[in-house]
Image 1 (cartoon, one colour):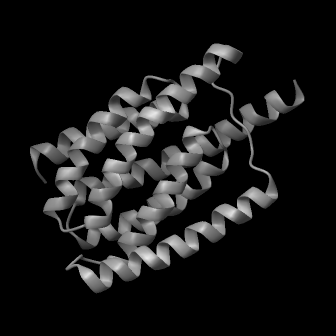
Image 2 (cartoon, rainbow, N blue to C red):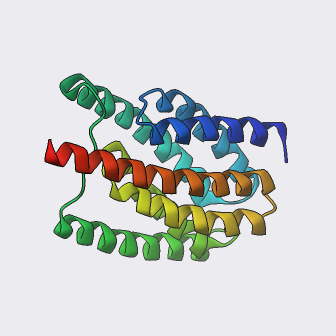
Amino acid sequence: MTALEIVAFLLGLANVTLVVLRSIWNYVFGLAMVALYAVIFLDARLYSDAILQVFFFVVQLYGWWNWARARAQAGEVVVGYLAPATRLHWAGGCAVAAALWGYGMARFTDAAFPWADATLAILSVAAQILQSRRAVESWWLWIVVDIGSIGLYAAKGLWLTMVLYAIFLALAIWGLFDWQRVARRTATA
């Protein structure tokens, strides 16, 4: 455990808690967190996770813009559900992308746990995009990612990051229930 991991841990707690609360301020903490985790994951040879942080940085900027626009139009950050066909497209896309990315990491790098890391990275990409679009289903993906990440980070000895993902799991469950409640309320309004 390093000082850098401790700071990233604290930023992550603030970020995800504010996402659950649908606060646009989550993005300030999220941008700082992903910048630090890019360095941490490179050092741990979790290359998919390191690259993922660069993606997260860009998508955090998009999410900030999208949430601000939605809040300006509705007075709050509105959330909703994907259409069933859209869910299937996302699931198929994730499966193909995880297989391709995992193969690339296993074949062309010395990545630790290339298949698990790649799968969790791809699911994280999908979850982050869906969260930026304010889709309730993003929380289901985050729950899967958090469960898998707990094991991956434990195997790499990133103990504080493992604890962070255990807390993220609890926050994701809270986020799922809260966003479902809000989506039902706005659907009937």
